[in-house]
Amino acid sequence: MAAITTTDTALLRLMQLSSVSLPVGGYAFSQGLEFAIESGWIRNSQQVSEWLEQQLLYSVAQTDLPLLRLTMIAADAQDPQRLQFCNDLALACRETRELRLTDSAMGEAMNRLLVSLGLSQPLPASGELSFVALFGIAAHNWQIGYPTAALGFLWSWLENQVAAATKLVPLGQTQAQQLLGELQ
Image (tube, rainbow, N blue to C red; front, side):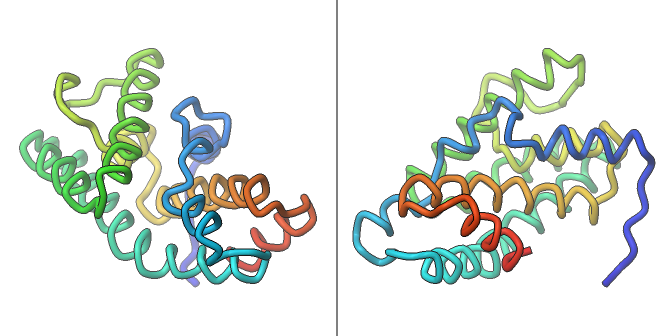
């Protein structure tokens, strides 16, 4: 396991960026979990764990984290065309209309937040904005290194998914904490 180094300020900003109270609506989107529960594919804590592990390993880690890294590299290079490419690629990688809507709705909310916090972002606000791209831009602006930003992004995603599962399956609070511990 690699050592993660960051300043206290960057750590505090990471906690802010990864918080469930970040007003971007992450808690409102189950990213397929609700459908899986309604379809009877998931009925208990073990099945939630297996579902989320698969999503982490084969979706978030294979798509969102590389996009986060590419966005942060483009932001560091101050390359607006590359940032636009990363944003567009993130949106193109969403397999369904619903997943694209989730990403762009959270992206628009993140854009409003960044503007209200006085952070500039070089993507045109008139187009669709990807949450993962704006997360990367915010992490860059707050001088959060990629490994640390990736952990924050993963934690935010996982915590929101477990919160959704807690309500939808339903799970108890202790089971939710056990899931968070297992999937970390």
